[in-house]
Amino acid sequence: MMSVLDFEKPVIELEAKIEELKHFGTDRNISLDPEIKKLEEKLEKMKREIYSRLTIWQRVQIARHPDRPYTLDYVRMMTTDFIELHGDRQFADDFALVAGFARLNGTKILILGHQKGRGTQENVMRNFGCAHPEGYRKAIRVMQLAEKFHLPVVILIDTPGAYPGIGAEERGQAQAIASNLRDMACLKTPIVATIIGEGGSGGALGIGVADKVCMLQHAYYSVISPEGCASILWRNSVKAPEAAEALKINSEHLLGFGIIDEIIPESPGGAHKNPDYAAAILKEVILKHIKELSSLSIDELIEKRYQKFRAIGEVIGS
Image (cartoon, rainbow, N blue to C red; front, side, top):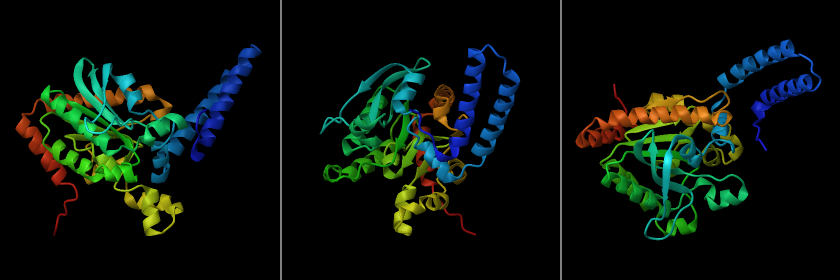
């Protein structure tokens, strides 16, 4: 069953009305084309008006939409010959973070990213996309394997944050993420990362140190979730919409801050409305950046990556 956000209801209702008229006309062999055309024009106008003035909180809701494509959906739509790799060689395999070799338009790559579930059972198995330390250790293990075979690394980020449970902390969650930041900074192969949904805190950054960081139009990227921020500042998570505005976690602000390098447009209403379009545009952008980065020497690649992240948060004095 399709999930509907509050601000989408007028659009969904009008789409249902149009479908109803089409079926009515077909069943009774009546031409209702003029009426349907008027409603379709009204629908397009309504979509433009609603989706052109979304608040940051509404865009957070789109980023979290349960029908939104996840990492394995993009793997299926964008790549061929995907072979999944498992385990961190220390503790276990983490199903919240998937990785494997694949071909992108014939180019051999390593692709990895957070994976959420469809439905309760799979979400529990995937831990709602919240990776454990073994997930981050698996990620750097396979990235170093890609480095060995001179393969570009493609990363898809979509997590509320790293798992904060006692077991994860006991197994070194913070150290696993910190080690990834250090090791990815000097990985000798091109890295292209894209935030496809939620980009939550260190859980996102743990696989986010890349030469190019892109972001889908309605994704978000933040040091803390709006609810977490609201709970700290106002002691009330109901204030999450205000927190989202204050945090400036949408793609346009982050591009202006120099935290991301490119915004990837989505179809009206979000990537879940037209997954094939989202995958086609994402694939095109990734291939473009891989081609650009592959022309650099290893020394240039690592130096540019280092300078990119050193410049984040830089304050220019008078």
